[in-house]
Image 1 (cartoon, one colour):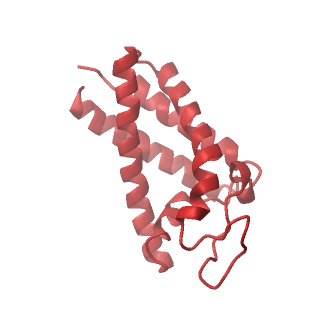
Image 2 (cartoon, helix red, strand yellow):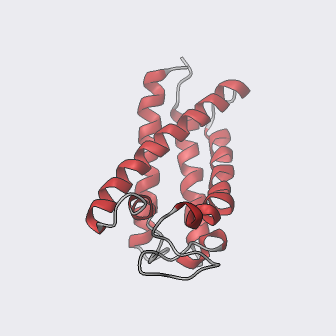
Length: 158
């Protein structure tokens, strides 16, 4: 494994993914704010939640890039196309598995089964995170495809 290439392109792909997701929210394509959702798991202070969430999202993206790099090495596939295919699977996993269980992990998020309370004030994502807008699944999947394509296209095995 080429550690310096992983550090560079894992971080770069993560920054691009974060920018695409933030841009899609800013453009009104989705109401989902992953850094805010992550940060409010640790604090109720909305301003600090944004900071904590951005740092956690960057760390998570960097850590997930290790899975991609491992898959590149196991399969001997080092291409943007293979990375994009992995990104598609990753994005679908986020929407179909991670988002539905998030209310069970998040201390400040309501769920589909129990509504909001004084503490649980965040809206649950719902199926495919559609509670955050009809275009949310598209932005999540496209963002992860681009993330994977960057990793697959630029990561150098040696």
